[in-house]
Image (cartoon, rainbow, N blue to C red; front, top):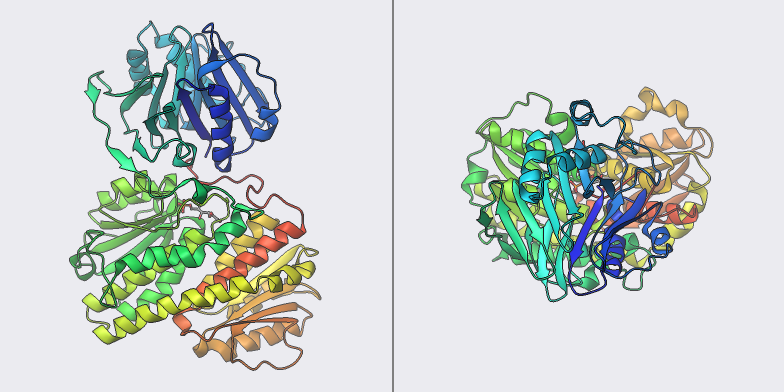
Length: 603
Ligand code: F6R
């Protein structure tokens, strides 16, 4: 949450900061602001409630070569210009991503009550830093962080240090790069890739200093440290809309390619092979149970994996919501393989879950999209998905590649544990690859979803239902619809609906029924009859060859006849498109829905 950027160099800093904030806006869009030194070394702060576009309208007459910028997702204090970042405190100008948990006690201890103008925890940190500042930035920063509890990524400028920016982080991400255009620091790579492919992740407990001609990294005692340079594996095009009206639609279209990029480099002689990922087979043979932990869409991918893995592996597979897991006393031990799933690799609850799992002696395998992210660096093993940057707040292609990674893990585990013969494993992988053209076919017929939403968008509620794997898919369909169309949606195991929820099914209420699982098909269809009998508007999703009695479905969408285990891939596309067109139909902000932000780095 919150996007951060800092720049020092020969170019016009304001332009670089404002463009960078546009790239970072998906991290939060309640307000935006920049602070910069003008050529006379005076600091100017400009901040505005609303999106970066509003900030860009403000006249900023001075020239500048050094500054910091922030786009906010509000945690402490309402959405207004005063609570927007940057914050000024004495000689300090600061931007912050994260939460300072002890800001109340710091306010009292440093007698800040009368000085604070905002309601933010960030301003408290700025004043505490100012109180420690005696001309030595590194020493002041060291003293500040010794007093802080919580998570933070800070960029700081000191009035008497024109041209210099200092960065420090704990949990919240910060990446930095020295480029031909100058020195840059940001909360994520999207702001850096217009300038460079080489960058480094600012390590925790280190201070980074940017000037117009170099970047220096220091340990907390002030001694120099050497950054570990990484290379980004996607380019600027990947972070642009490329002719699509929205990132979400572009990312839906990118799914077949993303799947190929994730699967194909890991296929050796028709089998999943993780040698290049340095994931040994004994990780899979030594475990007695699997525990999957994630949040939101990533957690829904985990639920699909449970339904897939348990019958194949015949060992317990548990799925936990990371924000619950981290405060529980989970039944995991050194015989547990904990699979952590995160697109961003920065979700704070998922990271805490990873740390808890490690502390219990479990082996951890992280499925992560963002290279070098905190979860990727801390997990024992990593399986990178290769979806490229996902910019739309609603996750689409990241979900599909997470599933692909889980399917490959499941297949490799079944093979090395003796649940699958070699032929069964080859056949499984072939069927996984067959799901890609099935997704392409669903993308090609997207007008079906475009038309069907006309009924949906007039309703307040929608129900999704299915059994087994179809229920797992429903959970994600409901989340997608809620988050970008603001239509209330709930997913139900089809047989459970009549234990209460069916009371809400009145004439015209949309029910999206998913019936792709052969062994429960007739049961699900019976449940569809039950809702139809109560007047529901039924949108039914089945495989191609299924005959359905007239009048049962108001709209019937057919997917190719895949093996039951792989229907999630075309079904995901349909559910994503329903949500997308519902959002468009209601004239909402598809890519940046209200109250949300990409990468949830606060609890
Ligand atoms: C929904 C969505 C979120 C994320 C969740 C986890 O469309 O994007 O539910 O899936 O916040 O994020 P990551 O995968 O980055 O840990």
